[in-house]
Length: 218
Image (cartoon, rainbow, N blue to C red):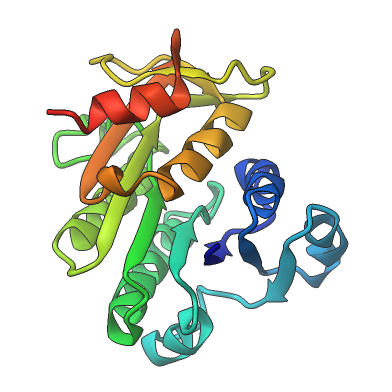
């Protein structure tokens, strides 16, 4: 199948995604910052790779992504200081996009959030503002790239059990289980028609594969 590099390999969604990709026959390398997380990643069947993407320049990231068929960006600063949020969610993401384009990886899947965009509406006084701005900038950079990209924009993430069903027609965010987000990423990799599409979604009633096909049918 495909060689997939997953950046942000110890996140809650990533740890659910990795076994799905491995079960589908993909060769999965999961990039993590903390070496103490190697065992958790290895237990999913993915190959852990310790690297701090925040500190890598574009050339170093090019070496990291080279040889893969697809890159999945599921990393994030996880809150904290605005400086770190911009450094990871915007700057490192942008460098990874440039790196993927430079070495011809081609397929790039960005995990964003429902509502990201120039009109995100988050007040500069809100602690979420830096994240909203960072994701908006990274998404825009990806859309402007030559890559075969898909931006996935789930709404508020929960730890609910997976339903296998989503809603891609909603105009307002609600919530969606992390396990369903993982399944959406896996299904997106398997669905070429999702190329150069932004797909926002909530939990819903339509089976994931069917929902993705409906999202790209227009």
